[in-house]
Image 1 (cartoon, rainbow, N blue to C red):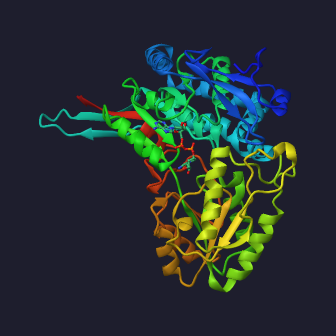
Image 2 (cartoon, rainbow, N blue to C red):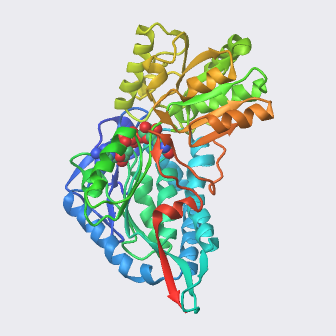
Image 3 (tube, rainbow, N blue to C red):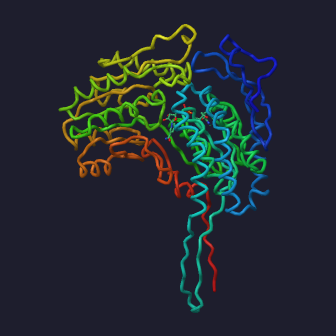
Length: 503
Ligand code: NAD
């Protein structure tokens, strides 16, 4: 699948040094070409590191047909116990190829190896294991019913796969977020066609090898590469052979996908954008709040849907908090993925860098005080063309500013003071998004009160990104539709059928 072709196309010495990989579609258990090739560039230096086979309508159609026939083939007749064993084998397969996944993920994203090693790849494996355990243990409901003739009836529920599931993924946590959907979809007996982000095609493609090694029947897992509109994303989501669509990405893309899914009245599960608030009370464990907020603002260069871009700090500790946050941000080492000292890598692409820097400029135009950052770091010449930006902290803007309202998805945050609990809850909720929040306080009653009224899908207290995969996950307001995770995934990935037996 990942080969170094004899005529590798490169645009620089760095790429030639690394080798340019060819990344193909995976359809019916085989790696296949597309209609054309597009370049995958490194976030580190903008050099071409891959040529990706873009799927046209024909390849997308072939993938959907392969998925359909696998549903009716051996996959469809497998017992739950057999599927569970295959899912465990997939988790083991990812772990066996850990270093391959790690290097592919790092090459595509430029993220620190320490992050991918501890989060992205292990979670990729865990997503198969946890949903195998869920389907193994989920009970079925049963109701005994009285009938006029006194014989009675028995009602029970059967879960059946929804069919061919279209899986459309973003670039920020590629393997983790893709398997978060593929794991439960397969556990429930569905087949999938995955459209990874055009920015991060490698780990989805590599997973095809693990599928074959684990004995997953051909056609159960398919991958089509490409872009959104006028490309594989649109072809997949408008394909009438796709029974349900699960998506993670920007809210406006989710809205376009929802429109596509309306044709044929197909169900959607949408995990979308956020503008998450952290709420820091004066009674917090100060060091823990600083450490947690630094992570929530700057981990993965701020490219985490659950990350914090608004920090509300109770006035008595505001100045001290801003000073400590600044110190922490300035200590973050910006650098290459394999340097263990690296705390922050580049953004995903030049395009995203332009977007983030446009917000950096806008914040200044709007009168923000730049506490730290606000620009591009000094990098060695060979990395000068990479998507590097500085971690940035602002104060001096209010809740109405676009900096406080719009998702930037970069390593930046606006810190604002507040005076009362009631006020901060109102302000945190005054936003179109509702994905996540982190509340920092040592007052137990307040912690429960605030967590209960903040309008989000996940409210952390004295923590951030602490995830138990059995819990419901999703967004409120424009951050999402539906919940996945644990048994909640079953609601989307299965049709629940009532069987009524007259006795
Ligand atoms: P994006 O919406 O630009 O792209 C996501 C995927 O959709 C890509 O594969 C893309 O090719 C595809 N796509 C784009 N337009 C399409 C169309 N019209 N039809 C079909 N497919 C289309 O998102 P992104 O930039 O890759 O990711 C960043 C976004 O994802 C941020 O908004 C972030 O908050 C969000 N996100 C949300 C969660 C969550 O769990 N809620 C998790 C991670 C990321």
